[in-house]
Image 1 (tube, helix red, strand yellow):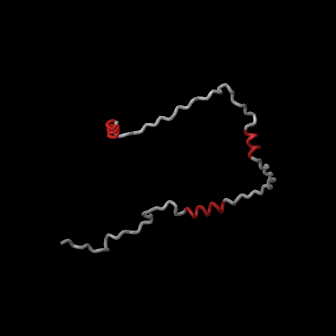
Image 2 (tube, rainbow, N blue to C red):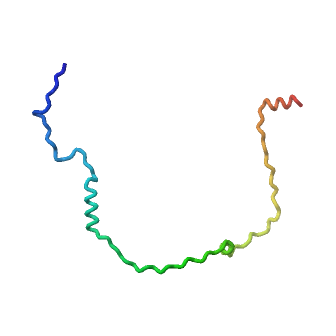
Length: 105
């Protein structure tokens, strides 16, 4: 059976002056306070700007006319219509249904 060691005595550690864990932001609050004290807020009083009146509201027709102002119509060279092909539908049918249809005819 192993013996238990006695605590204390000859191998006591001295507390070090350097902390084991260093917090990089521990002095941050103090630095911020010092910075705000040294830098006084710079307030400038500018003369109030003259209020610019809002442009009058325009109706939709006026806005549309202004938007298309200067547009020219497309040439009317192609007056023929292009025929649209009917959509092709493909019904997926099982082979068994096709055989049954062949036999029933």
